[in-house]
Length: 130
Image (cartoon, rainbow, N blue to C red):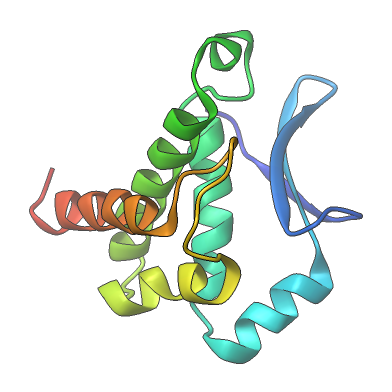
């Protein structure tokens, strides 16, 4: 994978996409500032989740064939993995979930307990040396 460029932009929180064939992450600066005022790890977890969408090819044509819940849970898994590798505690890795989401899922995003389970699985996978 190439480098992923990040840009502040007009999005709700953060999103992974491609621009002219290059992977990018666009984030809402005010939202990230809000997250960091609650926990310094929260915005990092969000960005790691967006990296997960790129790692899992969710932005490519292949991603169009995956259910949105699958994409979100796989990106949460990557976020947990990355957060462990960066030195975050499990509670810090999960902090964005407590700030961002209500506990109910939607058509596009699973409920928070499932998402926390996916992040936790990625975290422990990294901790156990895989």
